[in-house]
Length: 179
Image (cartoon, rainbow, N blue to C red; front, top):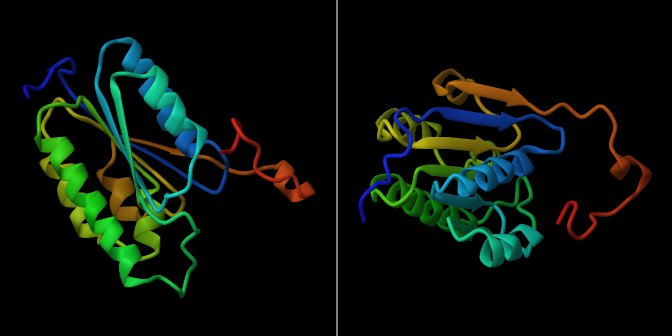
């Protein structure tokens, strides 16, 4: 397929921090881009359970493709498996294909910074991906613990900072809001 070339210059965004809203910001940008006819690929690292955004993308956003590269259970520090690493590497392969294939204007690597923190992928691979991306591709990287190398390579960095969260009051994830 040929690239839409709708973006003359693509930038690199990082949405990081301990506050809520990183994935939501990336999905919001994808929604806006879809409305403008831009095609978006979203690779969700470390996620394998069902989230409502999967339904929304499949049913309402024809310009957005979303895939998950994780288990239904959460990845736990100190208990990372070879399968967790394999899934992340599969995700990296798919993201490289999305970037080089010419079909997408925007590529989102959801939770990639957390995958870096868990040593599922290597920071040098991500930095190289950023440096080698075609000029017209916009990249969005999300997740807690963005390393300095990624921050330095980005054009835009937003830190979501938690000030107060209802999880502290034992409110569980609600369908359509957190999952």
